Amino acid sequence: QVQLVESGGGSVQAGGSLRLSCAASGSTASSKCMGWFRQAPGKEREGVAAISPRGGVISYAGSVKGRFTISRDIAKNTVYLQMNSLKPEDTAMYYCAATSGSVYGDLNAVMYAYWGQGTQVTVSS
Image 1: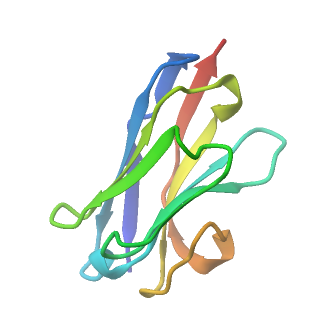
Image 2: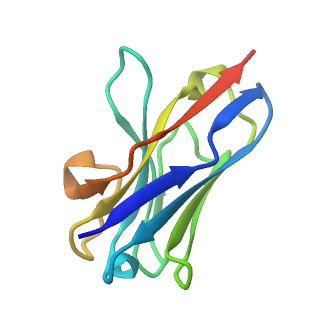
């Protein structure tokens, strides 16, 4: 079992930055692929970024590539999402997720078995 707790959300003006953190607990958390997803009101959940267990494989959604950076600190069992040049369309609830094994989940939500409660990001114009 893996527990995920997100933090770092908030309100920011367009062009600003935020860093989200996801603390994972559980004996096998460091062996999981981790991803960040987001869901805006009235829209489907979309994959934002994903990182493999050792950090060697990373994926980004086209809408955030070049602006967002995913990373993980294996020793701390923590995954980060650095978000720069934020836009109003980035406003959403952001969720951290982990796969059930070491398989690379990419940006496909069905590949992820564990989910955090989410942290709200609001970007004003």
